[in-house]
Length: 456
Image 1 (tube, rainbow, N blue to C red):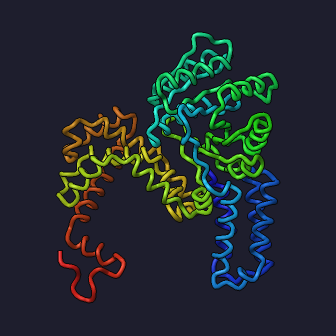
Image 2 (tube, rainbow, N blue to C red):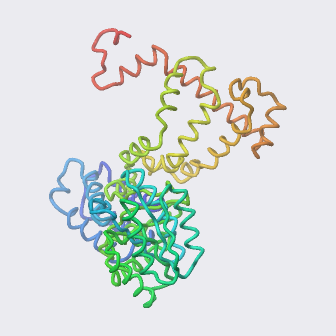
């Protein structure tokens, strides 16, 4: 997401680094920024407001006279991006008398049912709440079956009403069932709309009045660009939306929807959805996303991902093998590290969150291909337990068998073995006394004084 916008904004603003700002080069930079935002499919009112606010703050004595005017302008752009994206994060209103009702609305094909399952999983895991989900879609029986499957995968309770011809009655009964089961949260998935249909909008309005939800979330496909903001605005006029969930952001290289929704609708973005996996939903933080757009990374989100996804037992087990010799770190350990990376969203997701990586050239970004990681895991899976423990025994005939079993080529097997060998060497060096001394000297203050280093 935001690949094109990040590249264009980065190029425009980097040209100002280290230069004395004038009204002329500020105007030139803002023309580039305006063009970049429009190409990212950001709604015109949002672009105009953004550029005007940046110009008002940039063309002034504070910036023109600052010691690092280029960096000051970048800070202004960052702060205005945060403002456009909504300012502060808008968390779910879960601190209410249970069961807290969440109503899901959206157009067909936006990923509403899958998002319902993702949200149930997120609330259960991160907020330690018991969640019940129900479908009030009386037009597509398959939608009810789909939600039941998704709920099972998410570890949430599911409620199926005996009748399937009254959405309001189903919603009321779901809330009553949540109360009976002492559930903390009940999420009601409504029928998808193909457009702003008056009869269906009236129906969801009656569901809303009958259930008095704490949250009404509008689920919209980010790849529809400006239409996402305009559709959200139309729904908000018919329904008191409390938040928006942007889905399929991993397929949206432009990112215009995220920069338009708050400005056009006044409704905060609460979540971003990626892919079909139930882990693919993250709370929306305007300040963090602004940093990612400008190539500054998002270390806070990365740390949270690591704390949530990395297996502590595996990490401790691996730490115990550092410096213990090459045979202690086998191919199973190597595969485990690849799988941990997959859990963190893959190389592309990691690169987005690391400072400076957003400004990588397009050719370099193309190398961050997660399919390579999956191929490497497939190669290790095709080895026998003995081969994983003693990779030196893998000869030519074994390589052919492994390649055939994993659907790859012998060159791929050789790459896995080579990378594993390199990692063994790195880990052995990391455990040496010399490496530890070198690391300690790099710490703030040197840690070694002026003498011969810190005693180990």
